[in-house]
Length: 358
Image (cartoon, rainbow, N blue to C red; front, side, top):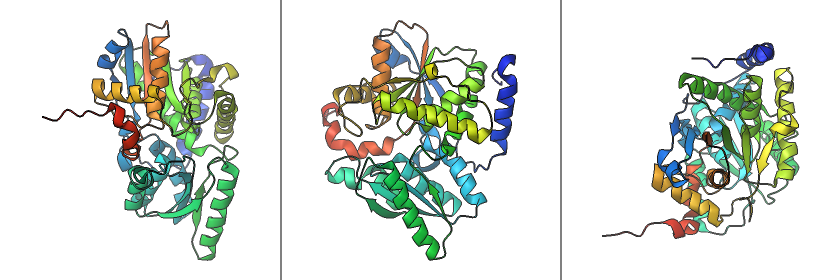
């Protein structure tokens, strides 16, 4: 069943979706991903009605939100006859891991530029989790010593691409900086349509959505898609990398970028961009007590694994909001995946690990 589109926005929605459906896209996602209730976790939150959209179940390469985004990057890469794909990210980057997996699936070579974003000398952090899987997928690695220099990281990627071109390769670069068109965000415009169809099919009402807000592509794409389709469901982005005053213009820029790609109006207003950074400290990739609690509660009550960097922090923000909210309706959490990273953080997770051995 398709979600009903109010007549006032139907024209813009049809224009947007029509453009979306003709853009180069290479399908990689197992969709629709499940929309499930979390009744046990809800009971620990004074009976709150909690739901989860399982985008950790997108299939390829152990799943995650980036699979949806990569469909558009790989669509364009294959349309350009690329034979190599390049990406930059932290050592435990989910995006890099899934780019490597997608490259295997499509027959492309993959080059990953590793940034030193998190000062973690642990052998587990440097050799397990996502980095282990990316190596298994056969990626070639390059080092970039800085961790908070998006422009510099993109420029260095271009230098690697130029070298590959000189060797006769035809590389395609997935840029990091928000000054580049947010092509991957289109994956969550598609996801917004999928989510509204599920909501309509189940004859339910969602009162608020929470999602990790890092690069911002997932947050912006979801928000843009919902507003384009006439949905006013509030979307709260839980900051996982930067403070909300820095993240807000990034989401706004991405929404403008999506509108430009789709040659349509931007339906997202400044007031639509809702961000929360209450659980961000001590910073990206570093665990706090709220994140540990969220990981433990979700695992123990629902058998669902969260990662320490993105979904664990996002769930911590989500549960913090549930505790302090007057909303008695249905609250939805977008699970963006990232589970492989949990193995890189075993030492940090020790406080919540069971030692029940009989």
